[in-house]
Length: 77
Image (cartoon, rainbow, N blue to C red):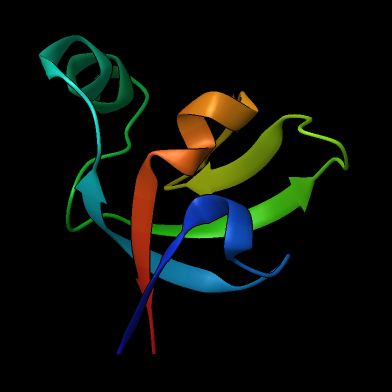
């Protein structure tokens, strides 16, 4: 299995969150949005030039800024 940043994940692909690179404040914020290690997500869209990334987690759509999305490490099969 391959580990990549959420930014590198192709649109429409499913992946599992394995790590969030950041302090406890960022990890708590992500947890509040339903993004935590072990959670499966699907990347919906990614705007070019460091724009936001939209993902589906459970039944919710979540938009993350480029800086936050870079710190989410996912595992693809």
